[in-house]
Amino acid sequence: MTLSVLVTGASSGIGAALAREYDKRGARLALLARRKDRLDALAKELRDALPIACDVTDDASVQRATREALGAFGDLDVVVANAGISVMGTVEEVSIDEYKRVFETNVFGVLRTVKASIGSLKRTSGRVGIVGSVSGFLSLPGTSAYAMSKFAVRALAEAFGAELASSGVSVTHIAPGFVESEIRKANESASDPVPAFLIMPNDRAAHQIASAIQDRHAEAVITNHGKAAMFMATRFPRTVHGVVRLASSQIASRVKRG
Image (cartoon, rainbow, N blue to C red):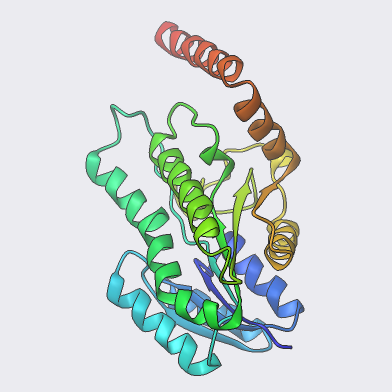
């Protein structure tokens, strides 16, 4: 059976890699993102892809895009809520408006996506993938806006999965560590601040994500360092928080001395 798959945030990074992965698996694809030019270019690479301009921070845009996908495919078998942004800075530095902007995309964008598609997924006993982050288990200095949003979507996935357990719809929370992506860059031409040896290629990550969703896992942590960080944060939180605070204070004192 040919799967019908909808992916948000499909214009780059994990979203684009997921589109290519599902294309290899023979799926029909609805690709959603704001950057329509990138979606058009990606769709040309794929066998059966429908590029749809969509802003997940806008209710009407998500509803319209979902209706277009349903009109083309009839129903959806898989929905991956992947669209996300990041803002770096301390709580003192980041404005309330910036926190709101992150939550509109990373939390309410996910919520809009799943609410718009849940009726169709119930008809197909489908699968939902919610892309969170290892930051949903461990919040580091300078990442509060992003981490708060990822803690929130982890809570959403947990509750949503339980609510849908009797309907035949599965919900998979995806928690990537450092995966090849533009999200950590200050701009498109900037280099990734994370050391290359820690970064998993996004095609490898996409394969693991798609397999976890297909197998209806409740959760999948992507990358070994991500698994280690989640294990430490959930099993030894006091130790981890102590180390993070110590490292943060040492960095701050060096900056002051410099």
